[in-house]
Image 1 (cartoon, one colour):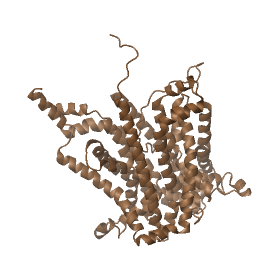
Image 2 (cartoon, rainbow over the protein chains, first blue to last red):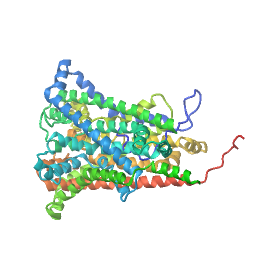
Image 3 (cartoon, rainbow over the protein chains, first blue to last red):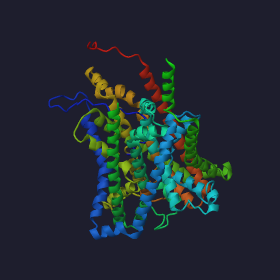
Image 4 (cartoon, each protein chain N blue to C red):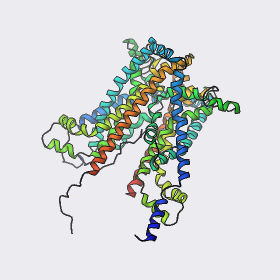
Length: 297
Length: 301
């Protein structure tokens, strides 16, 4: 799903010849059994069996215990912060990402290749490093924080800091999903719109925007999904005050440190279900994207 | 071309871009955003690390605990990346070269670890291998330590970097189809020969791309590793965890010194990644510029 960890190497979905579909047809290529078997074994050992442990552990709780664990006021406050901050950050990334993608695709300027490469920094920079350096920048004596402090604006160690960290983490998603679609967009459509008397803004909002909408929403959903689970960069800048600036993943860690395994598991299950739902949404959006681009060419 | 037509063309061309000042405004906005969110944090790491001079920086990196953390990080990546490389190639071969039922579902399952919060990823291994876990008592009876020890760190890292190589290779190998491999097999090559001499040269850039992204994440993972590590200084602290420990002890220079190594790793990753992309682009262009092959059969009149 992070999918798109930059879909830089273009993938053209080519139809794969049906090797073994038709009855009686022999597979020419070897290794199907071996590779599929290994894939399923490795997937089960690393991912599926450990994940199922989460579900089974939750079953050791009664419904009342489960509900109490996932709906205590402190946990509810953490949901509000995690989802609210993730949504805000994804919205900022929606606009900023579109702007960066647009500038990178449509305009020429010095240093463009470096800027393009730098977009992926949040994928490559360990989250803990991002966390401490953003905190250093935004703390009261930091490069940026010192200009905000006189106005009474506090970013580090407040929910605002959480949003900043999540903007950093989600930045590449929108850029990298929108960029290839903008590159493939047909200029003829825009020329036609202009010849028919549309202003530039009309062309953008009625011709360009609808064609990149699926990619834009996919990037938004990916940034949102990533932000919900994010831990490393946030805990340094958040201040981690219960009820105020404590994110849900930190609640899980806190319960684990108190040996409340069942409680930690219950909250983790809630997060897992939400992640799966988002994964399905993203898959749906990507399908829409493929149909859209398939229909145009 | 008549004057009127030229005018229309010019108007159409002008209609596909913005006036100069809008252009400058947009470029300026994008660059300002990138500067604030990407360049400044990198610069902050460098300045904070060198705040007390180069000597303090080098001293911080010479510390035995820092060395232990660097070693553990390298060991973890050296195990996790090859494991996921073998898996990625196997999964891509099965998914891209063959048709079978449930393929779309399997592809989604491969992506699953990306959707799981790193903290949850760490937690599930605690539930399986921890003292209270499924096989925890058995492990304790046989004196095998997985949680709060190196094997747990490796497992958590394998989980969070699980899809990187597979998801880079699957679309690439799907796009290339199976014709070249089928030709090799028909001409008498064995399965391994076909893979080494036909498939591998075709996917080498995608493979390398997946490997360096996988490696960057493996060395930088924090959340999942933090849950299973137990934070034993000099033993189960990876570099990112060591950064946290130092930072929480208010050893700012030392924390940023170790962090600077990770930032350098990130920059090297970006450089290699960009070089791969440019090479790939050039190869694609070279292919596009080849003269078209003559069609086998004449087009119907």
